[in-house]
Structures are given as structure tokens and as C-alpha cells.
Length: 496
Image 1 (cartoon, helix red, strand yellow):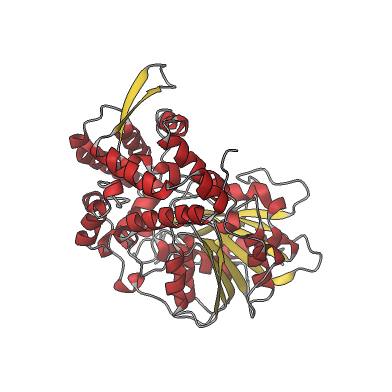
Image 2 (cartoon, one colour):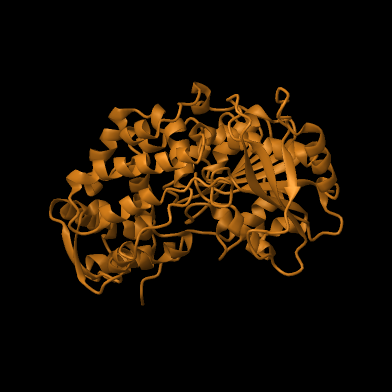
């Protein structure tokens, strides 16, 4: 299907390379095969790896280009369907490329080709918008004894330092947003000569697919949105409330489960009171610093201690009541482990520049300041917990242009869509998928009981992946794999 890529790319380069002595012609995106893939691929899996070259900023007059890595995995089926699946992960700022190592686990290849696309600005893209300065600031702000009055200046300096470094590399920060990523995927489809294709997206990348459905719908056959984030949602205005709602639902299910309720009576009431009490009178914990062996003293409020719940994955859900019970009983082992991880040193800052550009152009400008401030104080259990990913002041420093109003408005489409939600997902709650349904005339919705964020990546139980693959094979009906009916409210671990 894609055997003539290299020939097409060569011809395009020959005929459309801009001349230094003539006015530059319209840029034509290209795909160039590379013999140096980013990751090791499972033995026996056929694939093509290469780079899509596109304009950095389609809205400017610059002809500066960037390169985006792409894997094209050949289906295991000797007679594959003609419509491949294009997949890109969440974020913004997360890399898709590591998924290439695990193609043996992806059911989609049983029926059709599967294409991985890195989002521009992420780790394996050229350029990569990293911000180690920001990661260092996070690390410093988490250290015991940090003067919170210095927080604003610390992060402002980090944002400015990162921005100055990226600008010195001649990177146009306005070129890194959801619209440009959607246009990249549309360019890839055209360059590869794909007549019809499907899209698999998770979390943030569900915003990318909404732009594609609105602006480039012609070749899209079907769409799976796993843990959808509607364009029109102002994430930070309700993120703390979503977290508390998910906690309430999880612990209410424990109360309604005879074994869980018997083992942990009044768990929800006791935990909420505990969080409120510690917000007023912080919990003092001593932790050994793994970097130097010294003892560090932390003072933790409810906003810190709720991570016992918020950091749990779907695989951890059955243990959530037990972990909360342990905390209430004075067993601080889980909290100490989390704190120890904080002390291990700053992260690399991978993709954080990309995240800043997206957030400051598309999310922060549409926020209500009143709603943001209310989220910080509305819930006494976690009072002071900030819903802001980046403050408005940081976005002023970053200085990217606000996107058009339509980027914060709902789309309408009749393209077949499968919406997948985790019942306990506080990052992209079920209600957001329900809201999307009103404007998608050809949609189905599956809610996975007791699961959290991005069900299709739950490797312990690939039921959501099976549902997605069934939908790609038949987008005209709601998928109902037998495994879905077997998923019930979690069988909570009582420790006995």
C-alpha cells in the first residue's frame, strides 16, 4: 500500500524544493523513510518508519519546516482492510512513539494497518520543546522548607528561561497547538495517499480529532474517543470538583458493597473529615531523602493527602478503600513512598514547552478567573488545591497568541464515533462524554464500571481495546464484546 513512498518523496523533493533565487513556491509536505526508528520493534512485525516534514507555522509567511516521526505498522492479516487506524496519545506534551515497542499487544493490527503519529514538539519530534527549567522548579517547590511566597517568582523565572532558550533555537512557539497537529495528520493522510482512515485518540488527543472532524472530515471513516475532552470545556474551572465527585462515587460504591462496608464502615465520612482536619492542622511526616540519606520533614494538608486516591490507576482501584483505611489508621507507608519519589530529583521536562504553548493558547485564555478562584476554596477537604495547570501570569510570560473563539466551541458531526469512559475518571469525567453526545448524531457510548482514565490502555484487561477494534470493524452498530458485560463494580480488597 505504501511501497511507493520513497519514490513519491524523491519526486516531490526534486520538483518542489524552494529555489534560493526565486520566490518560494507553496510548500508541499513530504514523507521520508528512515532506517533509524526510535524504538525496537517486536520481531516479525513489518513496519515503515519515517518523518513527515511540514511547515512549523502554517499561519505565518515563514517556510521553516519541522519533522514529525511516524510508524506505519503492517497488519498481521494477509488481506487487511484498506482503511488504516491513525493513533496519537494524550498530553499535551506526551510522546506516542514508545507505543511502537508493544505492537504485539495491539488488537487493531489483526484487521488493518496501524499508524503511530508523534505530536509536533514532543520528545521524538524535531524540534523537541522540552522545559527542564520547569521540572527543576517543580522539584524545588516540593522540597520541605520551601518558602511558598517565592513560588510565583520561581516559576516565572523558569518559564522565561525555557522560552528564551527555545526562541534562541529559532522555534516559533505559536506553531505548537491543536490546530497545527490536526493539520499535520491531514497532511500525512494526503502524502500517504490514504483515501479513508480511522482515528484512535485518548484524553487530550480527542481534542485533535474534534478539530479534524470539523476542518478535515472528508476521509475520516470512524473515530474512537477514549476519555474525551470536549473543545468547549474549560478544564480548570471544574477539575477540583471532578476529583471530589470521583472520590465520592468510589467510596459510595464501597459503602454499597457488603464486604467493603463491613471492613471499612463510614470510610467516606471519615476520610473527608480527615482531609478537612489536616487542612487545618497538617500531618507531619518524616521521610528519608533517597538522594542524601537525610531526614526531611513534610507538612501535608488535605490537598496533598488526596493523592492516595487521585494517583491510583484502574489497576489500583480495588485497593483504594484499603489504602485510605491504612492512612486513617496511621499507616503512612504509601504516602511516604510518594514523597520519597518527589525527592529523587527533577524530571527531564520532556514536552513541557509544547504543553505550555497549547495550554496558554487554548485553555487559559478562556478560563473564568472567578471560577478558578472558587475551585480553590469551594471544597474544604482540599482547600488551596489549585486547579490551574499554568497560571495566567505564566501564560503572559510564554506569550503565545490566543486561538480563535471557535476552538472553544462544540463541533457537530455525523461521522461514526465511539465514546469510551472510565466510570471513576476524574480527569475526563463521564459527564463530558455525555455532553459531546448531543452534537454527534452518529455516536455510541460505553462506560467501563470501576475504571479510571483511558480504558483502551488498561493492559491488565484489554476489553476497551476490543470494543474499539470491534467498532472500527463495524462503525454502524454499538460494540458489545462479551467481556464488557462481565465488568462490574470493583470487588474491593479488604486486606483479609
